[in-house]
Image (cartoon, rainbow, N blue to C red; front, side, top):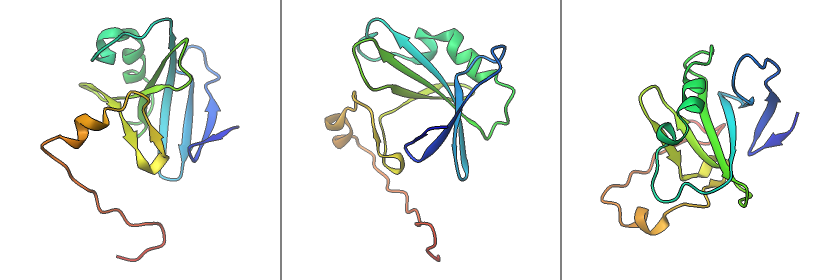
Length: 130
């Protein structure tokens, strides 16, 4: 069992359930499906349009709704995966997640610096009182 980004990983051992594995840490569990493609789809694209079967597999998993579903996509020439959260009605590409020290290689920093909205979520560190 490997550890990555503070998560532990366990492979899916049931081939009839179509996902690659679970990563987990305290208070968070993620079902992950890995996808390697030959070429970058280019530009803006939606995971549910490019990979409808993979998205459907994740949405149909027989897991509680509290288990997050993610599709990870990479091309043959990239070393890093692009991560997509699969929600019941849409998909969302994760551009950055500071809690996991994850930054998408396609992160559009200039775009987000100019975004008309911004919100900082005031999170407490473990062990801090309110």
